[in-house]
Image (spheres, rainbow, N blue to C red):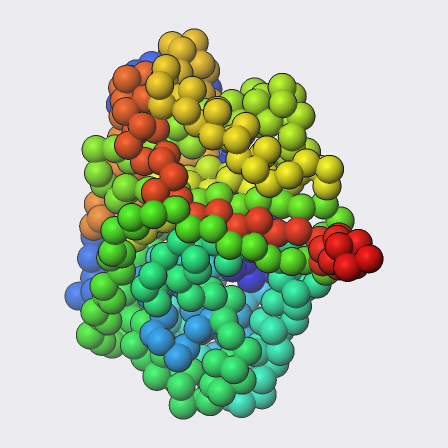
Length: 464
């Protein structure tokens, strides 16, 4: 989750302002100067130079996310993201914000399935204070019952605002994975059950920090108007004295094969019209099918030109809106390290039946699986995806995030610069084959969420 807001993500992919790179040059010819080193305590550091403006972006990613939190500690990854802003013995609460914002910058944090990250961006003059403050909270925190109670209340209020008191309650992001997957890492409520949050004691918080917030479980990326050797020296100065600790073992996150479609129904006391969440299990990110899946997800969901919008909203008129994609809404199609879904969230009129929506949906998916995309459609969506990726990399803080995540997952930052070129090689035949293999009913889960008032009215009418 995001430290200050849930949507949009602080590192959401930006519009493609570097289109000229993808058009004028083959993408593999554009690779920002980037280097990587590991300190003796295990901290991995990535530096990428960008001298277009006197600013920098820093991202520190830790290998602890929703799916990696231990059983009985649901919501701890997100809770701890908040606690990291509560100060340290050396820098009490508020100092971090004053240091960064006083230098003309901003900071934030967010939690995803496979990582928790902390980001800062500021004028280059603030680099030393920012590195000092990040090193300070990697050493220790202000572990107090007051801070724990404060942030536990903040997180629980966030759940009330974003889930319990919102139409649809993020059921497409929380309930759908819970029904689509079978194992605790992938299926539990990432916001956390109140009973687990309420049961947390300060000793539990300290133990969580000692286990997961270690130098060896972190990757720091710095992008901006810097010289690599000078930045490595600064990082050595501020971080090398942090003691090394053993990094946690990664839990097993594999899922047993799904063999049949799963369907369920929910009611919603706040929604005015019904909604559908449909999730297909996706192949592993590093598999041969993954990039074709990312393209298929964008062909189906990306904007009003997408196949699902055109089929359901414009043509059949059985839906009011369609959103979704691979690893949506909590990430990009290129940043995950465990099982994920291609999710569709469809809002439809109350006079339309669920089966009508699914029939129209299946027709659009079947068309992709049997005919594949036209070359024109494929070129359009791939060009947009590559443009978005380059636009993202142009912004120092976003490039820092991408580099940090790639190294955290793979031990290398190469994929950040390789994915745009690999996307350009995806063929219509590959997208067609992907749809035929993965976008099948036996590989999906469907939740139909209807307004509670409408259901009550139907029951009353049936009883008269």
